[in-house]
Length: 217
Image (cartoon, rainbow, N blue to C red; front, side, top):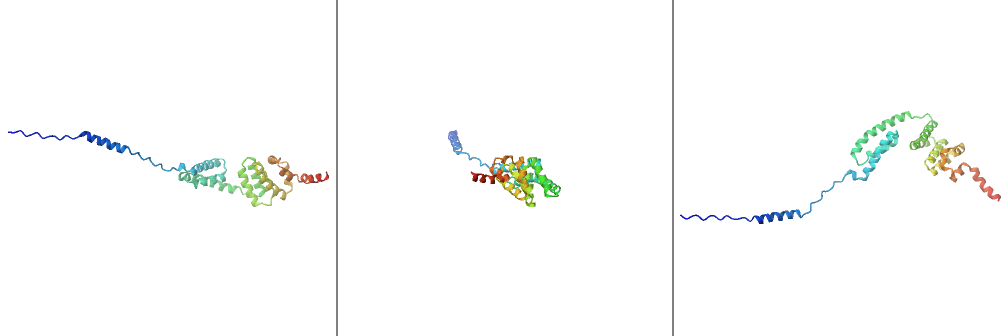
């Protein structure tokens, strides 16, 4: 009985498969990986930094009980690009408005003079911005009162606003000549003593006598 010939086992070429696999890996790895796209962050918005500054300013002003200015700062935050800060500031705005409502009821001055005295007290404590708000209100309500313009002139001088100080002091003297004498001894105008316009306004008789003395020569 003849033996069957052993079936030839077909040898597979493992090397070629490995080479193909390596080649395919190399092909895949040769492509550079796409860089992940960076999502725009609200922190990159320049307006966000300004909103944060206004938020911090509002908190500081609220602690200093400068509620009008605090409200203005908080309103800028509420209108800004950060929903989180806008939501947080709504509580502060509510608190500030409550304080302002109380102050509005308590600050019903009996006369322009009483209101003026309050503004001067603010100037004396260094709260120039709030003092200006009150004096400017008075200027609308009692425009014919010389002391209101005198107060504004003194405040201008304290803040280094020489041109405005001269303008307001001129108006004050026009309404009441006594303010000319008052300003001569007022330390609030210390910063303007070297200004010839200020000297001419306070001592008009000197400036008028100067041309006459020149004629006599």
